Image (cartoon, rainbow, N blue to C red; front, side):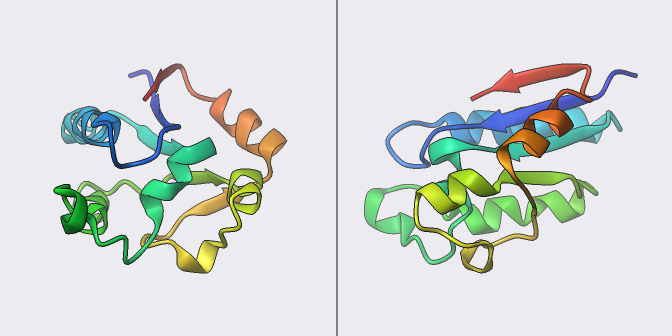
Length: 118
């Protein structure tokens, strides 16, 4: 079975890309397909803790990303250069991730058979 990488590159509020990407990820994982989640660019904002999503009428993403453990999704990669460019650090994220410099992040992504970008 081919493995799948889901890439999140957009900020969490204003568009529903995060929801669509999670639906795609969890649906594939439920069929035991090897999947991984990648964050880059403004997509790293999706992983921030204490975002007060209810103020914008959105769901709290920390609860949604909590489902990753239930589906045994352990491969979550974040571009550390994207974090740095936005003044963020890994200790401010709401889930466990593997932070990789940009080139390593791209190299890891290249190991997947299929990718979907949101």
